[in-house]
Length: 381
Image 1 (cartoon, one colour):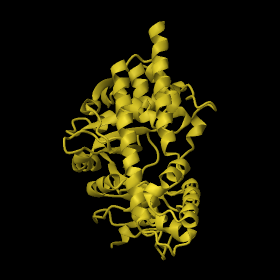
Image 2 (spheres, rainbow, N blue to C red):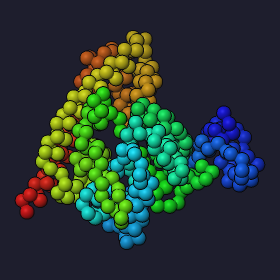
Image 3 (cartoon, one colour):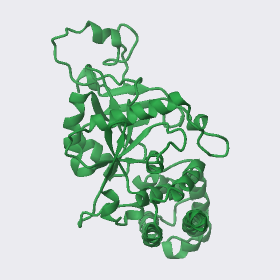
Image 4 (cartoon, rainbow, N blue to C red):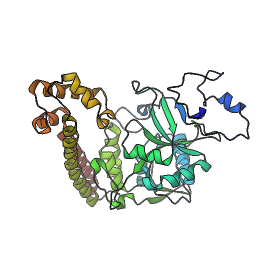
């Protein structure tokens, strides 16, 4: 491993200026300008700003100031310019689509979210570097500090895709703006782009929540003009589908202006209902598969903590571990040991109750009904 690839979390020696090797601006300035350097692999980033500072207490996005409108305009123009002429499939994700579908900003949009097809990542990688951007995976420097510093790892298109395919919850794919030395640039109008990788099934249909197949037409970008620059936005039904799955207050509130934009149809909502039904069936099968696999390793000699460790060692569970999930695993493991229930069939009712498996479906259907009610309000006017 070269000096520029030393992981700062494992480094034991600092440079003469007290910084991690390969990250010191002074050292980089002192390097011979004509000497070719490998890209810096690991870089720290300060904690992200809390988005709650940008919205009102009710979860409603604050009205942007004229300066903020100009900043969002510049970011969108920069995005259009970045991908101008690129033969790749890309489109905006998230609530900024709702603003562009509505014809005006529905509030503050903190960042840019983007979808890119997995098969296009090598082309994107070649496109980005000459234009001052690169692919990164963002993770917590200290996993015990969820609001602490981030570690940005510069990666290849293959590693970028691998993280998405493995659903690595701890590694978030991002595109970041860099300087000539490969150092991340914090300032500017488009310095970070949250990136979602579109995976497809054997029939080339996009894959959604629970592994279900989504309509191909949802991933056919719709081009709009922003200050003379073409930007590709998402199908309104795709925006609604993913917003419905959001667990933040403003995800639900964002659905109201989308419902009232006139861009969602009754047919769209019917499709979403059908997809949610498929998704819930898929998730129930997935729950059975995951718990069945882990419980297959339980032995009669195990105590409660031994069963918990068995769950925590599973790759799927480990990538989603938090205090709430750990408490649920403690409760389930106690039942496994005390009642000697060691199969999914014996524990199904307990699993559904403890992990509230069926609540997710009820919540989604309630949110879908709310969107349809908002649409009907406009129909009655």
